[in-house]
Image (cartoon, rainbow over all chains, first blue to last red; front, side, top):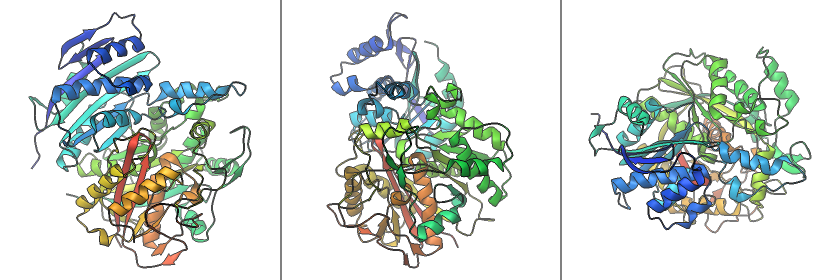
Length: 206
Length: 381
């Protein structure tokens, strides 16, 4: 018998605006750069986590999205929360930075602090470390938000009892363009976990 | 719940363009790693396992394409083409395509590349492969650091179990580029000699390049002779450090536990472990700890990095395919480059090829971001 799953909490970070479950949390003026905007998010969350400032933009974006969803969900340390993230640009924003550091043989300065972020799943590592989630995790790339895949993969993890809940999302950072939609799927919540619901929630214009 | 199997497969590497050629070389004790002095790739000489460009181009020409493709695309096309030819599979709406890669066509970011920059997007690589073989479905690109290749097997199994697909083709691959080499060099992880996984005198990794492909299917008819059933899998995070493995092997330990629980088998039934074994100090030590925590220290174990180097997004799948051949041929292959045990916990590293009845094996991998994957396979025939 198929178990019924629900979307409990979700978060959007786009256009210099953060909203949780459709409600505005804070907004910066549209000229503000991501560096400033993400710092505001960090302050708004009352975080004291110096690792945040070493992260690349993609990890900062994913980290903030996860904070908002996990704060709203209130998980316990021994809860088995899987993480499944997706995007379009992989880690290209940082890839370009690393390429820039090796392009010119006269000025060659590859750095481990940059190179480590040339993998998209580092975002999952950062979230796992902060919340001590020693659980199922995977990162996938698609051309656009793929509700069908996310729905199928999260459902499979829950059905096979690989996890009790799944933090899912679309976290894309490319140049100055970014987009984050994260949500939690488990047996708790009001909204049924369906691809249509996911498509609607993703499009939610704040 | 339906069973899922790994069936027809291919490896494109410095050791050959078919799985059979690769196994022939491994069984003869031939490593593909050599010293490369090519300023176009890196200013300083390095050890690597590279596919010969003229051989790659000659093989690719036989596919009859008039369009130019990137090096990685040629490797992956050739690999997948071999699997499709062997299996005679008809691609339908229920056939999935999974791409496993860490960096894809990242080399096009170099200002000297003749290809457009947009080719660096991994979904673009997926599109090239989808269009070339006329897959009906968009490719699912798995990019999860060094576990990608074996994680792709888990993902294929899960998509088949949930009824999304009847069968899935996985194409995995990564190339050796200055992008990758300079990065690992900045970590001081690159060995200045051929790598020696689990050895006392190991000095780090070699990066290699390969493409590997496999058909994953729920249909028991028309399986390849070397087919294996996927018994269980798990992919758990260390939650410890983004670039260093856990000191306790926690994520790998949990991944193996998760795979065993699903497989409903005892550890005593595992005949062989195909480990990750990158030959860095921390990785090999972590694996030895996890293997001991699982009480698997007597089980024969090898790392294939001594033959291929670390082939990144291909490695997990490539090594699972070699594992299939190992159980099919009832042969444990030597862990190339091993001399004296150099990890703090005892593990049973395979020193020379041994003929032995084999049924079940465990494949593991670990990578940046604290990721780990374990999958257990059992011989069908």
